[in-house]
Image 1 (tube, rainbow, N blue to C red):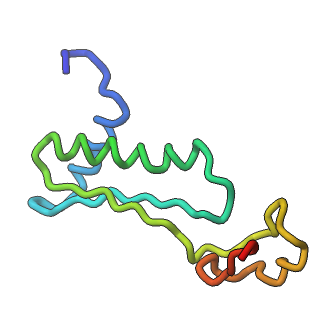
Image 2 (cartoon, rainbow, N blue to C red):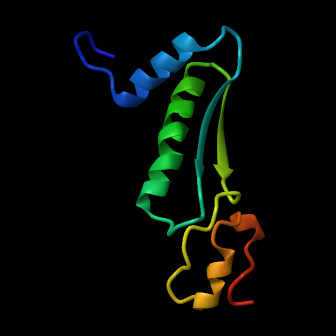
Length: 103
């Protein structure tokens, strides 16, 4: 980077993470999303931010992995649009235990 040029946010985040990590340890950048609501552009951000940081850390020759979790133990919060009202008995159950409302 040229002298006097500000580092981008990916470089700044990688700098902080590398400085805090134990020497010679693999670094884990973790993220996760939940299928409990509509999948939207914000979910993509949740995946891309740690991906870019992990890539910057790897570019420096430091072992790094990006761990992505799909949180299907999140609870069903409300009956989705288009689903029969009787499905309300499933509210508060983990998504992994909620049956497909359409069979």
